[in-house]
Length: 108
Image: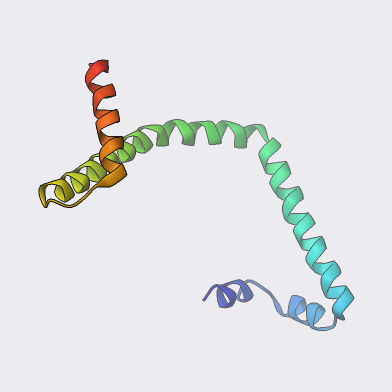
């Protein structure tokens, strides 16, 4: 459960602090915590090492992303062909297939 996992991160002092707050104090605490998250994210995003690492990960994942997209396209086409071979009405999907198929044939 997500709540249980989150609550296990807190220490006794935090439980005591939050339990002592009234409604307004709890609202202020939530706003302060959200602001802390926003500020930490901003600082991370502006850090030069983070920007470099993000580019490395982007480059690293590029090949995987391309491979997954290609394999997912093959799966979609295979499933469409199964429908066609089973005599199912493919409706608009058939029009999309015909259009794309002609574009690919012309390209090659």
